[in-house]
Amino acid sequence: MRKTLKIFGIIILAILLVLIRAFEDALFYDPLLHFFETDYKSFPLPLMDTFALQTGIALRFLMNTIISLAIIWLVFNDREIIKLSFILYSLLFTLLFLVFSFIIFNSEGAGGHFVLFYVRRFLIQPLFLLILLPAFYFQKYNSP
Image 1 (cartoon, rainbow, N blue to C red):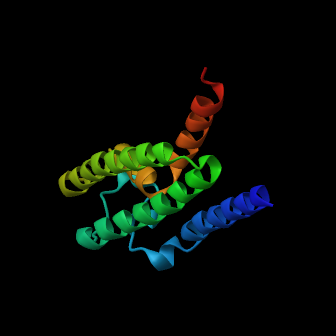
Image 2 (cartoon, rainbow, N blue to C red):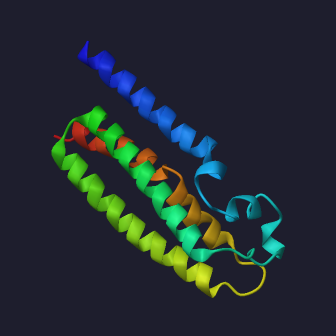
């Protein structure tokens, strides 16, 4: 019964991650969503409210992080893994958010938006969860 509840919880949390992605236009201010759907290589960044953009990116990262940590907890049920994950998420956010902000405030003209695209992608998508789950699984079940 306990294993069934864990699996059900993981499925519910995964659905929440999908819902964040599905309703990103309604939940977060992000003019870059539509900008990167165009031929962004030849255009300058659109005019935007940078504070609202940064707030939306940070909120989305926070929501994805909380759900991701809950998934990691359900999979491993280990406080040390959660502590390490929290530290890694915090460091990742700090580093990537600083790089993201630097690029936004110092972007001149058209082109060169590849770095911004990928830094922003790491901040708004739960990609780190896809890296941590197999890493912790390998560490926990394949270490001597």
